[in-house]
Length: 297
Image (cartoon, rainbow, N blue to C red):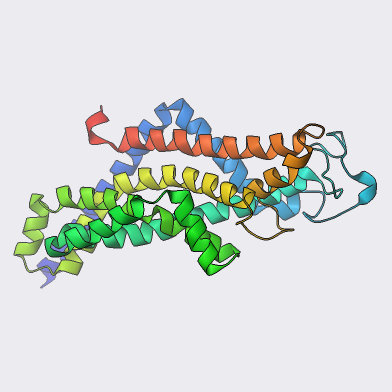
């Protein structure tokens, strides 16, 4: 009995050591990609601004003053003011909180649902054809159109916006997870786990999912960039969160009427969207390069 406990403890310790070694190697390879590291730094700056927006900004996102309306960027208002006299910098920083939060939770919904559908489809061949044909049906609908249909049915609101973007991205995750699980479930360690009496849930949770995470992480990083674009587009079209809450797409929409005279009202939030999306894209490329075993050196 004592020997079994000692052996189990040694196995856990060995697995922990191996996981730490893999993480260190992955981080070492990631650091070599200077563009990906730059993207990570830029993203961290936006996340920091979103978390500490209440401390960073000099004004509330809806502090209005008609006397300071339409001021060009200056020392007091570094990004200028809008038609209601609201500080654009303050609204941009608060907007990062909403844009990043919606993108993060939308991807979370996609990851959870896509993983469930993808694992079931790959592990149970009888359900594979049914699930994947449903996913193909949803993928045949343009993602933006599908999101608009969902949010129109559910109504406006922060949660409904996250749900609409998340549901519209689920089929892509289901296909990625399915492909990864199909290759992993044929490995020898899965057969060994099945031979010693492991049930389906144990095998999926302990053996298949941990070894299928690499493509899922890369897909999630790239999908968050697409989610932020989708959220901004929906807000631009009037399907986003309701005013006066700031969101970068809504700021673009509000500033388009003044683009000839107050160009900064559209250029500044547009640059913020571009910076975050580009950062996530180069991070995704960097993660793909360091997690892909074919590219390891």
